[in-house]
Image (tube, rainbow, N blue to C red; front, side, top):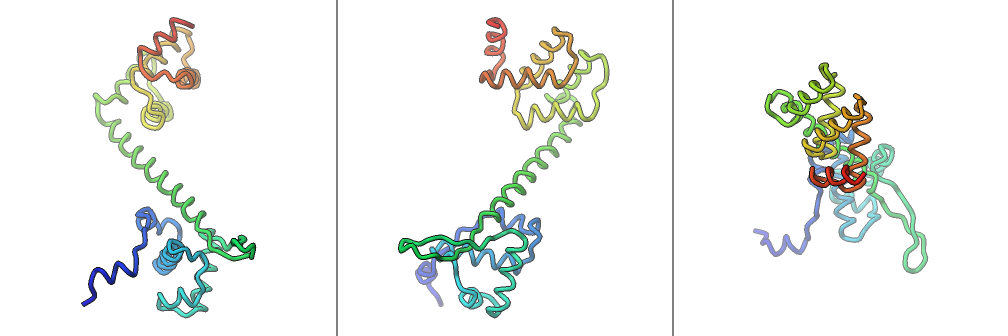
Length: 211
């Protein structure tokens, strides 16, 4: 039986959970995923350009098949074959996985945004939610029902921009006082307050008093 100490000598590889969760969205299969994991493993051991034979020894493929798999990942713009000069000023090759993680960042951001929007959609159904309260206030001041796009704008202020409900309502009041019933105008008000680092109602009121 192999002891844990022997496993430790083999070392460990740190893998992003995002890669395991979302690799299917990168348009790759399990074999290509395994190859990426091996490249990351070599990379973490300071071998940024393992030979096809070295990789093949870890997989159920020969060197030619590994070369073909690597080319597939290059064609899918997930890895790049680059060159650099080493300490002896010799040109060496290496596999750059930056594009893989950049695409993963985009996928994770979208997944997070989608989850947020889903929670907002649930919020639409809650009559006493901050979102619904703000929507009602806008409809009272505007004298009409808001469109789906306008409701989405309010939810974005709350969820994406993280404006407090009372700040949004105050921006609405300023817009009404100026007799401008326009979402773009209100958005400019909110952006102006944000640029001045005004995050609560007292700060905004003090700012309005000064200006």
